[in-house]
Image 1 (cartoon, rainbow, N blue to C red):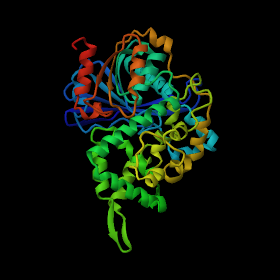
Image 2 (cartoon, one colour):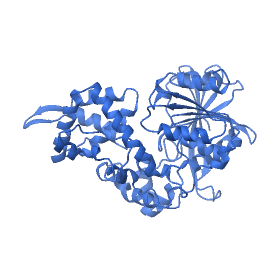
Image 3 (tube, rainbow, N blue to C red):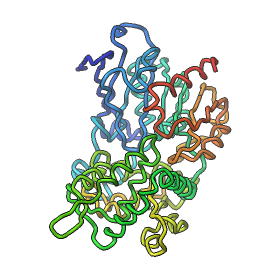
Image 4 (spheres, rainbow, N blue to C red):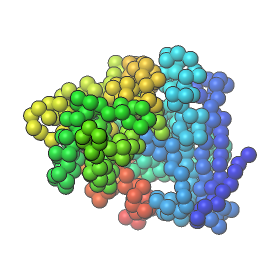
Length: 437
């Protein structure tokens, strides 16, 4: 039974669908997939076109609206919006250390999680579309970041379900291996570090002091996790967002207090670090991260902890070497390392599962370049020129490979431009799709 709620300026309705875990076995195990319908208050009965939103990730649930805010401000002018909790996230049969333990051995857990990639997410969306709109109904798709990767998969597998598609910060390289992705990523992350230290030069010494301390004495976080130097470097994820450099700076300001035995890392700092680094809220992001690049025609040997392997090619990210040579310690970015599964309590029980997925060699291809070259669905994409998370060169090459795809390349926004622009990014894409720009 659907539940309807009223918030400032919007009306929401809950939808829960029973869908196959494995679409090759439609009568086999079923999982729940949750989606929240959002419509502007007063327009509940209007015949509005549907817009499906696919969140970034992997492993990220859809945002929880507090009213007519962020990009919904613009979307609700024209659409009835469906916010999908992609399988395994939010209210969709969650997959985490607690629930996966019930599935048996690590091999059984890994086989289960192999069904949580973009191809299965798209098939979920298609099943939901037919139930809500009928077989002939089509909807608009908005994909942010990993949601944009899923959009390319949608256009490859089921373009007949789409009337148009918008992508923000999410044009993946169609033929990029996991190694290719990280080999391009480390220099972009280094550039973000340089910009941060130019903005806040005092942070060079602050970061070195913290790193030096952690080399000898990894710190215990409030949740029992262990903060190592490598974990500390993971705060660089912040540098890929519009306000992240400032957030990082303020976090570093409060790193130290005077304890009984002298200076020590403050509870304020350790609590803020935990909030940024813990995967308790989204373990699938870590467990499945490299698998989003896995395609047997591109990575026949599997992804194999590509971020860890490629890091060796970029010694500037070696914190201990930087300390020894008197250089700034660089933060890393969207990289998942095996060590995280030893230090984060939310990931520790999943370390063997993560290893098995990293070694998996039978990932199906996610994109159909031939079909994309014949695409008939109108597609417009915002490419954030200085995006730390998605390579601009890859995005533009993909744009050229998808028939009719139009891009707006901008450095006005970082990767989170859709969320923080108050609807401006989406408004631009809608205008492009309608031929107004």
